[in-house]
Amino acid sequence: GENVEQHPSTLSVQEGDSAVIKCTYSDSASNYFPWYKQELGKRPQLIIDIRSNVGEKKDQRIAVTLNKTAKHFSLHITETQPEDSAVYFCAASKGEPGGSYIPTFGRGTSLIVHP
Amino acid sequence: KAGVTQTPRYLIKTRGQQVTLSCSPISGHRSVSWYQQTPGQGLQFLFEYFSETQRNKGNFPGRFSGRQFSNSRSEMNVSTLELGDSALYLCASSLASKQGADYGYTFGSGTRLTVV
Image 1: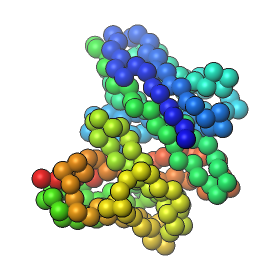
Image 2: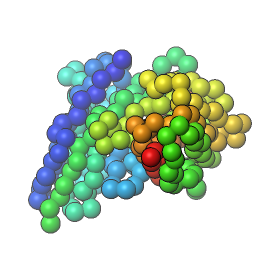
Image 3: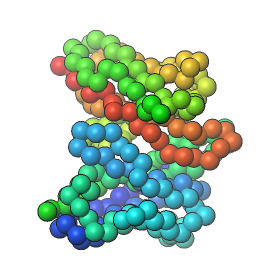
């Protein structure tokens, strides 16, 4: 089955710096890569996603890049703010006959932004 | 539009008891998945229901079961509770269908289960 590895497990930055979280996946058939943000005591929320036919996607201060050949994708956050502090999860999934889209999640990265 | 609603928010149960958790997905979402979240293990997939059928199952013992009703609402049940079952149980609904592309999850706020 799919295996998703996420690094680093903890990332500490100063406000205004950039943050990068990297994930690798094992199944070359995976074609959908979402990122979730979970603030302390809250639900995970989908913040950005990318499909395998796209190399990069941006939404204001966040961007995701995908390298299908190397089977890795990354989350980039620019001009970090204290409210970006949270646990970020990457995931990989694929459509299968019968419609299964169960994602495999990374273990999460705790991002701490110091004011 | 209403989000994913999970009830109850908190539960305290004694070892050996059983518990039922409820999840109402976003209107129009037919896929409902359940996850167990613990600090050490991250997000662990329990099962997924689609159109009242269990379509996928994770690696949890048979004490964990679920069902989905015709209105897409889902319940999960844990019997013979163990201390290790203490966790946040998250429900997630999705537009994913047999023909459609994956649109990711919308998670509920979860049920915090404590087994004592």
